[in-house]
Length: 471
Image (cartoon, rainbow, N blue to C red; front, top):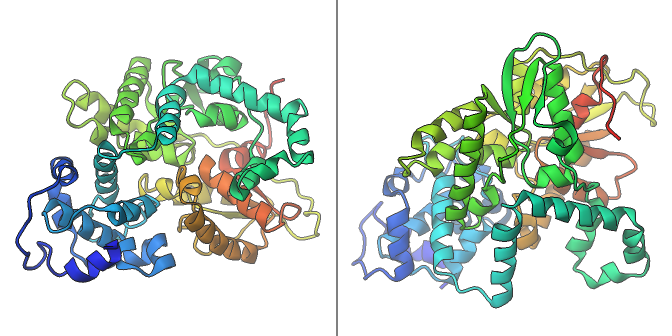
């Protein structure tokens, strides 16, 4: 029986109303009962405010594809009313995890926590095929948590991009052997590097002028090999704004992909390592330049709340996490930002627009800071993107594992992007940045618009005292 059919037959028979006789819980339901916060399940008032904010509900119109519907399904399983079958898992997997439902929820239901706990329960009982097990093991245990291996991946990708192999792969048609989505992604990958921010700048960069505070830079895993220049510019931008920047070399992957993919134990292990690294560094703030990473970092206190040895330090850590835009705007001594006064190639004033990072907006609750910074840049027209607060379809690895829905969401997003007539589309998260680059490429708009990270946009427009780019 499909999940939406379950909703039709059972939505009035869960504990929100009169319940049918409960059946003995199967092993997965027992695990969910132990892991899910039952108070959060019952906090949902079923008001439906979340539906208008939910991308998958808006795309499908199915109750089961809304946060309210998924919570009802979770509760039906925990209460023994419904068996968690394949259709149940499909609805949990279909969720982007964008958490747009949380800011609009009058009961303040922590839907994101419920989703992660449900996915973790599902993963504990999932029997993957051998190749899926192998991929998950390599990605979640052997690559992302190991910075040296990530650097090696960066070196190999850089060799592919710079040695001519990329041109050969495209010219000979080898890329045609891969699915279209992978071919499109290969086209828009940024220039990789095997040399991260610590190898380039060291672990401490002094403030320019009088020091305001000491900031710990969270370098990330993919950010440090795929967006190295953005990391470097983040450090330099913070320095320009009066912060001494410390980059603890013992830090690791944030664990967001693990937490969102049912690997919560591994996410906790990574969190413990990061808490130790930044606590020992004694920083005043912890800066994140990736909305997806920041959203988990700021919730390390929740992730480690049941670990007495780390609970207090995790609270200390979470309370200091700030997105770089918020930190610059609220605490920094901002330099002057200026776009060259010449008009764009098409003769119009230089126009920019902004796509929100879902986790930055919905979890870190920082949607105004990036916009306020962009509006401070001289000689630039800012145009608000309709639906900027709606997910672009990236959502970590969602555009890889849920390609059809991700593409559908991106297609609708690009309709609004075109309406802005912007020369530059700016965002605050690497996944969003790649997704928007993908949309621009597919719409054949690369000669009219480029997508950039907000740090790159700001740093490249510092009017004076701009450091030279490293060789």
